[in-house]
Length: 200
Image (cartoon, rainbow, N blue to C red; front, side, top):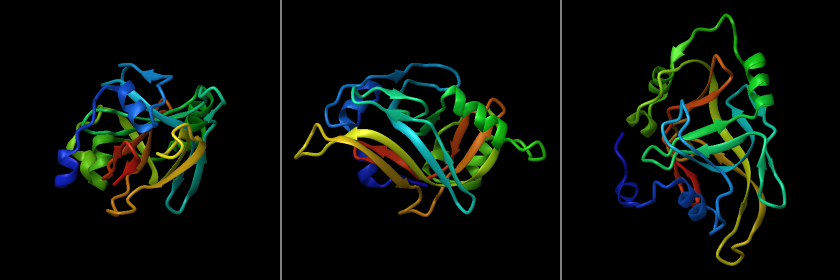
């Protein structure tokens, strides 16, 4: 699927720290994930992960939160500042164990992450995926995370929960998948991460 002219001409830095600052009203980054298998580049933290909502099967809660000193703890939602702008859940140890114990089905099939993404389609399929076996959990409809945000009138802002409906504009909703370690992966979808947040 081709990119819109607006999307092609948008110029954003690929530096993870700079992307955090530009998308958080000048607030400086407190944490950037450096290159670490299986991620192929540093990741920019969007906020503390609160929950994923799945189509027809409920939601998955997470333990992410922030304190008044803008420090994240627990599970996080991050994205790659590179061209794919792919979302990555970074689970806390407790959430990863819980995911492994409750979401993996011994009777379910395992597929390559790239094959799961191809089932959905969207711009995310234009970029490569790590070679990881996953099980499909379900269609990811909403992500909920908390972060400090602001606006032009109040750049310091405050803490706020943000809910983004995936596929709201394009109808292309990604799949939430899990690998054998309990790591969650978002497969496919038409979204990208603008400085104003997740868009598709």
